[in-house]
Structure formats: structure tokens, C-alpha cells
Length: 195
Image 1 (tube, rainbow, N blue to C red):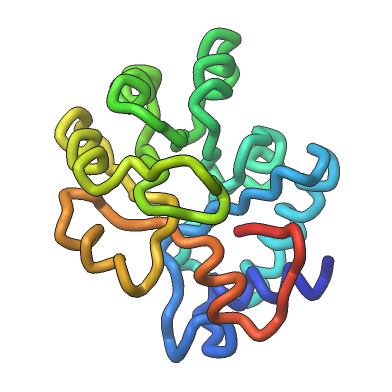
Image 2 (cartoon, rainbow, N blue to C red):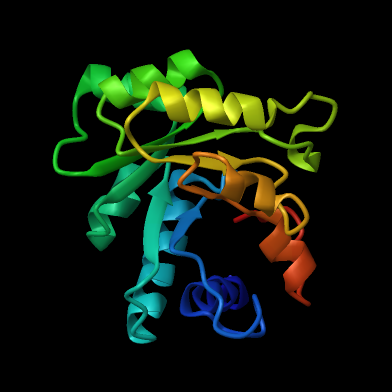
């Protein structure tokens, strides 16, 4: 796990061995759905501490799914699947934290905004191995989501260098890449782990 934390911290810091010279994401959502909550919190807290040791301040680090990870680090951000956002808002408990949500329809994006989401990731836009056999929603869908809400919308799903220009030409605020960072750019391979 230490090697993986080093790798993620390298991405946040713009380590050229991870992405290329001086390239780093503006935002890093750390999603590890195969980990238990306790293991995820340990990973996120360790990563948060490592990034702080490196002095990385420009990249926003966002916890995924587990509120405890956001609370323990004070990162102030949590990304949730849309149904989890609905559930958290029904129960309360998201006060004083910025929320992002994954959405798969215009209606979900609109409701996420109403529920207080600060941004949404909309997808999947392009074909991706993560959603093998499921048709992508496409750029037109992305544009519909962007038009329907007033919060930032980020494209997700199958985004890579060859189609990134299509996202740039859209009204989206940006794009999320996972496999592109883990498998294409990095010489190390971490089976079963996604960013």
C-alpha cells in the first residue's frame, strides 16, 4: 500500500514519472470501492499526510463515499454516488462539507444540484472497459447535463488523450481520467486498483 500511496502522491505533486513533466490534476477523487471503510479511511489519511509532507496545495484531494475520511483529514470534500447523496441528505450529516456526485441522467444532475452538490461527474461519456457492453451516453448527453445545471460538470468514462478535445469543446468544466493515469502513463501496474 505504501507504493500505491507514493504513486498517488506523485500524481498530485506532478511527478513526471507519473504523468509527464509538470502535469498534475486540479482535482483528485480517491475512489477505492474494493476497500472496506476502515481500510479506505487508513489509505486516505495516509495519502493526505503524504501529500501534505510534499507540500502539495494546488491539487484538491477529495474522499469518495466515506464521510469519516473527509472528517479525519479535514479535506472538506466528499464525492458520492447519486443514491448515497440522496441517502445522506435524507439522514442529514453533510453539513459543513462540500459534496460532489456521480450522475447518469439529466434528472439526477438536477436533483444533485437541489440536494446541495457543488459539482457533478456525468457519464459514462465514451466507451470504457469499466462499463463493458454498456453504450456510452456521448457528448450530446454531456451538453444536456451542462445546460440543465448551474454547477460544474465533469465528463467521466472513457476519457483519454484522443477524445479529450471533444470534452474541451463542450460546456463541461473538465474531465476525469482513471485508467489513462494508472495504466497508460505509469510503468507500475496495480491490479484491481483504480483512481
